[in-house]
Amino acid sequence: EPEVTQTPSHQVTQMGQEVILRCVPISNHLYFYWYRQILGQKVEFLVSFYNNEISEKSEIFDDQFSVERPDGSNFTLKIRSTKLEDSAMYFCASSESRGATGYTFGSGTRLTVV
Amino acid sequence: SQQGEEDPQALSIQEGENATMNCSYKTSINNLQWYRQNSGRGLVHLILIRSNEREKHSGRLRVTLDTSKKSSSLLITASRAADTASYFCATDITGGGNKLTFGTGTQLKVEL
Image 1 (cartoon, rainbow over the protein chains, first blue to last red):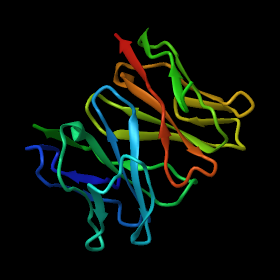
Image 2: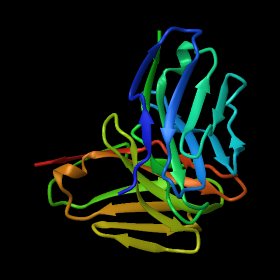
Image 3: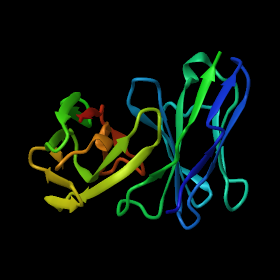
């Protein structure tokens, strides 16, 4: 069964450093997303991406965050200057269509900012 | 209550029993989805029910949707130890853009 692949599975970074989280969505999917889950809390929407541009972003997704689809397969989330409160599990997801099918989520990247 | 609140927060049952989890939401939706999350792992899509559907089945899963009460339920029949996980409802809100709003989740433990 097709999978969404995320790398790395764990990342520890110093506060103030930049991190790039990588995702390979399912190849025939058109919609891409990033969500995060702070330990013990709800899964929160960050950003959705379609047709090579951001289609929606939450208030969490401020100027410190950016997304890119640098080639036909990768989808990245960059956090420019990490803060302690950015520590969370970050999930990438993709979907074939909007509203008709569920999302396929990756296994996540656990980001720890120290 | 928040958009997407599940109850109970935690549920412990014996293998073979049925497990029922409920989700309530506040605003009009396009669809509602249920996901499973094993501890520390990713989310696995279980089932999607559209706002014009009332019931849907998938294997041992049965989902109902009552848009007048703004609530949904997930029933897992004949539960197994492997069903132990957290279960989340997620709503695609009408006019809410291309995103899902997740609930607080129900932690299900199925004991042998």
